[in-house]
Length: 108
Image (cartoon, rainbow, N blue to C red):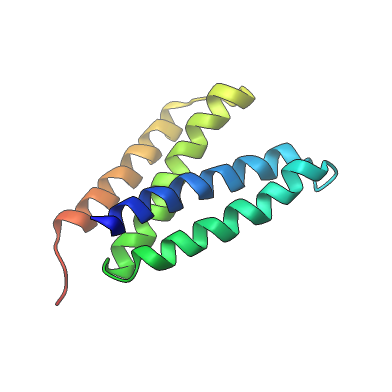
């Protein structure tokens, strides 16, 4: 159970790190710039803890795929980025892939 808590934390911290990248404006704003490194470091630490019991293929797909989906949502909601049919389709494909890896079971 704790591995899934670590996984969720890793995803949310990765999203915070990526959002901080946008807010850092090319590392010209100090606080968001520090956030990039702090959030990514914490995210990788949580991901490492999750990998103690989760398969790396599933964990990495979740970390990167669900993080990507959340970043698209943040981009649309906070930064006014366009939400096109192609973007929605691609996000759905990512989610389908992550779910597929999860339900396919462990290889051992």
